[in-house]
Length: 337
Image (cartoon, rainbow, N blue to C red):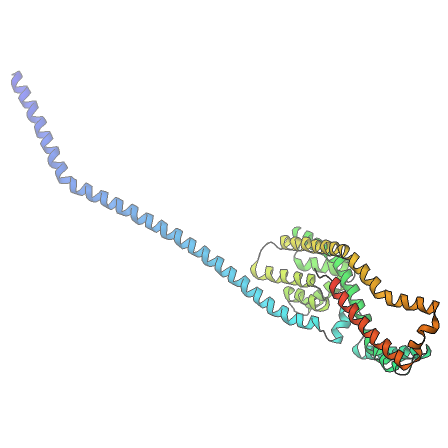
């Protein structure tokens, strides 16, 4: 009886193992196929993820290239415009020179004033006893030299005053932008509260905006009425920021810092060149001082230079060579920063 139970149990176990083996044999192919399908799905998912990442990377690269090309095109356009403006700045017409000097004078009135100045200057030279040959030269100097020299002097003074106040105005615009105001409000604030001539230049920007000109274009026009690189820098920064985007307050803050550093560098160069300038002044004044001392000690010795035609010729050549020497020394000590 016990032997029959063991046999029955063994038979059941063998039957179960046989059935499991048969089932495993039948299901093995399906399991292998499912594993292959799973691996294929994982491969497809990884490939899709890689494609998405590659596409995102390509999009970023394309966006960067597009932005770089936009900036390059903007810089080329600005360079071409700047070349045209530089040609006008180097040799501006008389009307533009008067505007840059801050003089509310029309070219016609300026020519009338020049003619009056020429007549007065020639009359003064004649009263002082100059020979008749000098009078045509005095007429030319009075008509073309002195008035235009005065305009150039006014231009230099106006540019100097502009550079002293311009960085402070940029700082005001930076604070206005950081506080949430648009740049147009900052420009209007400078146009009403800043010192001259910065106030006049920004007022021209506001007037151009009211006429329909865009803010970048109006800022670029500042270089026409204010002949200095700093005004062009401001217009270029506004133009690039409007086309390429970016932090405007940071760009203007950097520009203000650059302008202050340029001012410090100019002052340092001027201080280092003062010795050369003093030497040039001494050398240029030496002939006149010596001539005056000779006149005090021996007037009969030097008076033939002023009373004879040969003396007049010598004085003319001496004045020519002195002028050339002064211009050469001026170019040698005139450092541009």
